[in-house]
Length: 270
Image 1 (cartoon, rainbow, N blue to C red):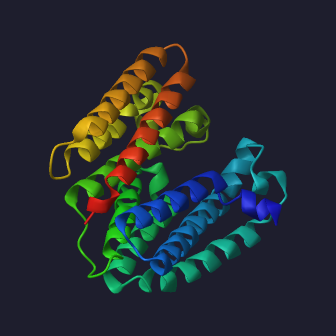
Image 2 (cartoon, rainbow, N blue to C red; image 1 turned 180 degrees about the horizontal axis):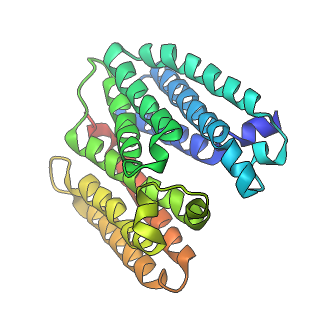
């Protein structure tokens, strides 16, 4: 059981599910709908994480990537595929229970993530599923509100930008090992230095959209958050030339600012 839990990419799964649950609360969903939203997002993310590990199992074993449950032998590939399919089967009715449009949008995002795992990861279009998947999440929350209001343009745009940044940040730590095994996604084509330099750009752009996009003045907190994001990104770009981890750490800092802005603006996502 621990091997199966470890192979779902638990960190990102918990983080995304918790963030969308918090956004549902700040957006004004009822308690029952918040629980339903959380369950739909959690099962969707679990299916994607398990699919990723199951599909990559042969390459991970060949590369000797220790620390992955399938590579370490603590769980079998067949079990992981079974868990992925079971989670996906649960995600469909849970998503549609939030409303037809909301469910369709969320399942589109989940389908994009599966397409990344199964095919697009090693192509120049590897960024697209991340953009679609991350844009779909706040849209799913907005469409789950009473009256199924269409999400505001800025929250969808910010979600897509965060997705592109998440893709770059997810690939960067393993980019050299991926290149050695023949993976040629969009960040890999940029190369380690190109990916590192580009990493903060979509994240800071998301900060700008979240701070300036909603109607009305951004306020002191919005401008302060935007300034912090810009300074962190600049520091990461400069320091990252000598210490690659600094670039990644600064990107995480900017992402945290973006999450705070998203929750701060949560009442206006629709």
